[in-house]
Image (cartoon, rainbow, N blue to C red; front, top):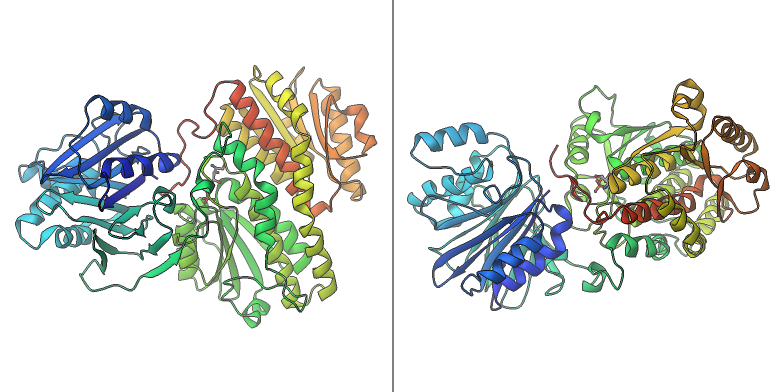
Length: 614
Ligand code: AGP
């Protein structure tokens, strides 16, 4: 979960590389570094802390100008985030530099072997071993790409590696296994990056690299092989968003921009799903209707916010498609003995498509012969490639570490899948599916309406900046919304926040309630009367014990007014779709509260956007 950029072409490499790193900082921001080749000499610079520290160092002591370079922004795995452990790492001769994303699992034995062979390793990282292995391999001839292929064959774990060598000043070499790397194809220049955002300002033509491939990048062209040196097939694609989508557009934080983009993101994800025959059509659903009719169980795997989307999916799938559905944290999935068969459909949800826990769960499901469907926001990422079918969300690039618009579009995706299953399995009539899709199509305007009424939520958040704990309660699909509200507050405001199923309260958590403790309650629509009445009782129970109640309920719900210290109204929508409107105030609440506490909401401490290690 680091950010990697490589460049070779006609421009000053440092500008391209540092510009790219600025767009990848969301992937890690413990330290940053660059390497540039100029006049056959390798120059490196690296600093602990955010990219700003590196920029200041580069200004103070500019490296020689060159047109080939690479850069790295780090989320530490091996060794603390200091200057020494920052990438690039160089070999003993100072002629090879390497940057790396991932974990090299056999690094301890490689390191011991290198030390025994007389190499002096200076950092605590696994990456540095690669620089020295390349040094040894270069001695056997064949050039940097050959050396990289030989080294990769010795490595275990997950890695994207990019290396340069002063002996070949027109060449950047990249390699990938289980970790992202894309090529940007320019005119007389080429790019390498963990994510297209790094080079989108220069080119929108990209090449998706497969597993276990090595890429040789020169200004004149790109060559891709496998680790044995055999030419590899690659998939070229055109990125359908532009540089403005990866910029703040006048907002103080990406998170604010991404919250505001939600109506559009939801609308875009719905676009083109209904055919002229009034039936749902899903893109890249490479699983046939016959196979979907044979499915007898669904298991959803995901992490964090995407897991919360999965929890909501369960309600929709069981209700509309009548199929049993389990939801599992991807990180736990393969460590028990999940019961899978060819008639199990495993749905993996991941914004980035690079979350290692999700990928490992998918691979485990593949071994057990289950069918695999991915829900993903990033074209060209690993997850869609490893699944039988994929439904893309069209949130556009999500840069802020805290997921917002991706979550809402994941909800749209799971609703579409549930309705599609209902359509092909005949558990709902065509007109019923169509009626529900029409309701979904009205959701962007509802989300917009919520966004227009957020000032009181911001005020409330500012007033609670001194609190140490906030609880969140919900029932039915309101329960995952409560979990999501708590997660947002934890990751952004570093506060103790817990989400509970409101019915569980009396089985323990109610002991936490004390005078003035803020408790956010997500109330289902009045149309679900039993559910609704139960939660109104829960609000009374906590209020009687001194809680300060913050109630999110549909407009016109007068029954909750007497028990709400603060009432946040959202437009009335069907129960299953309600998370699309009730989540938004919780995102705004967490973002504002964290900002009031002085935190950088785009880059919360200890976190990174894509968790590409297990
Ligand atoms: C959400 O705010 C988080 N930053 C995090 O939980 C995230 O949703 C999780 O890491 C999963 O990421 P993915 O969707 O890219 O797989």
